[in-house]
Length: 294
Image 1 (cartoon, rainbow, N blue to C red):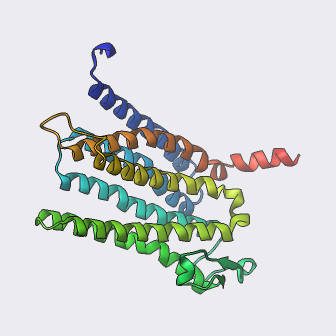
Image 2: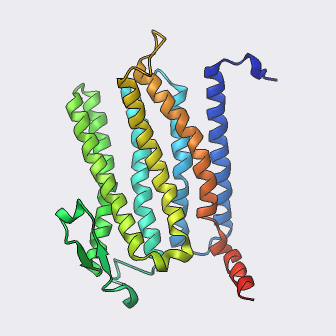
Image 3: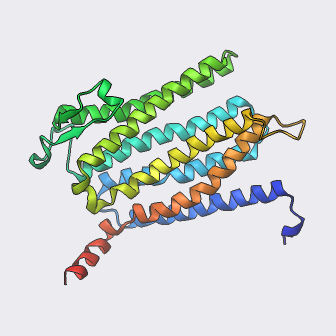
């Protein structure tokens, strides 16, 4: 039996990360199996399964990064690309799920009469490119869809280019910052379209608890992005240093980021069990409503 008192801090960190990944997988497998057992609406539940797999994919990929702390910059970039490309798919699937809840079909030009003509209020800086107020119709809905899906295309294209340029040895800092700016603009536009969509249809979507669903996605994106920026600043300020000749400070930074992601995904996996619960498909939600009305 392992003596915890004899473990060194790096070992404790590693085992804590491994346990966190297992917990994340446990919560997600529970939720996925519940949906598979009560498979009533394939269109919606396929989107839900893709969305809830985001947390374990982030956790597992981050843990793989911990297995090779001394990995190359290309190795870490590849792992980061896997997470962010999946993030792009999740954002698109979330919009598809909201469309399904509202019975909107862009391919069949189905738009319920009750939601036609609603006002969409854009905020700065979007008002530089769009009128402050626009009316909801097929054209504006397609625009929101394009704003979301552009990230699904741009993210893997940028990832492929970044990895290819590093492999050929041409990846100066200005190019890295160029990709960062493009990707931040792209993901911001995609998330903005989801926020606009939620505000327009908040009343109709309220029975589906869309805010909790959206925050699960936004939370993962927010935490991973901003803690990465924070770690960059701490490295630049010299707060994070390498005390080992065999480790670069960038590798230590990646290790810290990976550990934090492993720990955080446990929380998001647990929250997802509530936000994407199987109640609407198992009949549990209907039973609760019937009891309330009695």
